[in-house]
Amino acid sequence: MDWSQTPRVLLEWPDESKILRNRLDLVLLERHCSTIGSQLALLTKDQQVIDQAEEAGIPVFQIRSEAQLQPWGKSFREFIRQEVVLQSQQPRENPINEKDDKTGGHQLPPWARILIFTVAVVAVLAIGATLLPSANVSLSAGSYKREITIQIQAIRDQEGINISGIIPSRVLEIIVEDQVSLPATGTLPIPAEYARGEVVFTNLGETSIYIPLNTILSTSQENSPLFITMGSGTTPEGRGAQISLPIEALEPGILSNLPENMISRINKDLGAELSVINPSPTSGGEDIIVPAPNDKDRIRANLLLSSALIEMALEGAARQLDTGDMLLSSQPESSEISLSTYQPEIGSAGNTLTLTNVGQYNFSYASGDDLISLAEHVVNALYTGGLFEPALDTISLTHLSEPEFGTDQIAHWEMQVSWNEYRVFNNQKIIQTVLGKKPTDAEKLLKNSLDLDLLPDIQVIPSWWMRIPVLPFRIRIIEEGE
Image 1 (tube, rainbow, N blue to C red):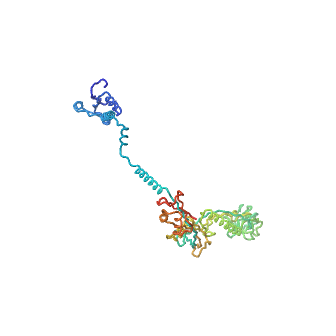
Image 2 (image 1 turned 90 degrees about the vertical axis):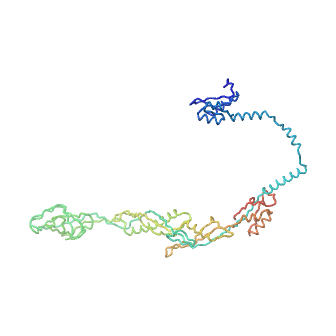
């Protein structure tokens, strides 16, 4: 391009070329042609190059004959450069001359300029007088103590509360375990020595019969003590032949001391061939008397442990109840001993009786949330509009009597509800009353119109301002509770 002397340069773009494909390269190329006095155009079918060239304001042709026959339009960059050159060549106006021309125009007389200045100052002062001052009006809300007594009824299976004083009676389940130990006052015989004696076997047949060692004998009664032979022997032949053998009780104790002629049964197959009898009493069986709990000890332990379990259940209920909840009775509504263990067991010896019980106790109680909710409903029902409203967050409850259950199993008692009420003011009406007035006059006017016990306090800001603002949004009402 540098050595060419032509006013127009047609740059043919090779197919699938990867060079000069961004807009910056094309702009730099077009600027270089402009500096040497030539106009640049492109001959290409690459759509990306065509789009970049159109954004840069460079003419684009796809056929060489079109580029040779058709006129090239100047790029918008060329027009901008020419406009800048033309503006730089135009003579600048002399600001000094302009100032001379303006000063030579018509001027306002001094009195008019003073009047305009005075009006402007007055307008600024008026705006400031309207927007600058503000006022705080402090009123005593007049809080007063109120109270009412409610007859409460706690009913089982009641759903929700009723403004007449009915609330649901709820159930609290407590499981406790405790034990008690008492000295045993009873005695228990312990078998110690075995009874002994002698029996006579009689042969009921003709042949001799062998009687083995440890043959078991008993009486004809049920649950009879058992005896065994201490030796063996053989009866003589012939009916009525007899033999004597020593015997000993199978178990120790005095129950085996039997009178004569009581032992009559042979607990073996020999019973059909022999008969047996003790011609003399059995003796020598002895019992040892040892301490052991009796039924009275167990009854006394149950009574003592029952009272202790109830006390433990009451303490557990008090820990589980929330603040404000109220037990309806110091006695459980229902109770059940789920596990009872004696040591020693019944029928065993021991110097001390230990009883362990696990019990479940159900207590009726009134929920503190239900009582507060009932109190709020009752208090709200007393206010249907007017000069006062209740402060529900100041409600406090005092139970005037203990709950008592009637024959209908409904708990009844009296409860006192105390709360604070406060005066309600119409802020818009107060603001309209004091607009633009002197603070002292407005204070007296508000005290009389609102029937206040105390004189309102009105503070104007700034303090040297003589009147309350005339704009309502510049006045703030402050209610102060006593």
